[in-house]
Length: 385
Image (cartoon, rainbow, N blue to C red; front, side):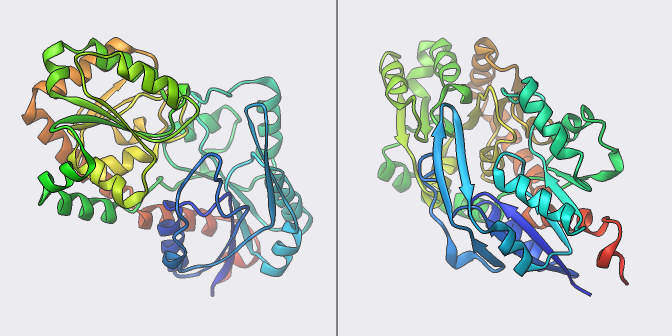
């Protein structure tokens, strides 16, 4: 017998569509996704791939705004949407918005098991602000089960004395098949793609928002530390947009010798081309719940350099496929980049290890973890045979 699972998700993100498609195909799951908004144009420029959606869904009316550093999102008619959906369980994608709290209240009132998807880690730059942590604790106490993407989030929940048996792993995933296939196609005609995008013959790649918390200035400083002959032969390509774009461009222009290209934001198909032609992928973040760009880069067969602040580091990056340094460790970043730039055999070995490891982080595996969490819920139709 199928059970009605309602998932509350912020926006129609490209990386969530394959996961929800896989979840909708799981036996015993009758999936309905409620999106709080279609997209977030001020922070993200992703296309909405509606033609790829194969699950029941709706988008609530919403209003967005900013209050200092806070991203505000208010919705209308969530309770009505939940009433129409008649869920046997709810999975809420976080606790940041008023809608999250409204859904929690609705679930308690209607005796519906309520799960939360937790991606926070101890390295979150907002962690342990007293007011934030008090609110999180109050929210988490009303949850029946918890879904986490990996080890860092599971360890974070231990601070709230969450029972280990209530925590389920649903590894964060991207469409690994898409990125792997596209990378292979691009490499078969590498020269033409390199010329089309005006890319250096060799380069390190960063993908993400151009903001200080992503460690972008640490990366520029680390690249500047490399020997002049390395900077002459190996460039640095930055893909993304953000509030620090102008300052990043100014810093990049001062690095000489060197080849620093600020490419701006690109969509999924072109992004895979940047991955395919790079020597290695660098995510020097100072605060990141996961870092799905690492999944994408690994699917394209790249060595990884990241920091312990990346939520994915504990799960995805080992000595077999990359290097993990402390946030802000510019010397450590430079040393890892130097080693990869000089050792083609190491790059090849690590790239192969990345490709093999990320296979365990597919949309199907993520969906299976969510389904397992739902099946664990006490009471109601979730335990009817």
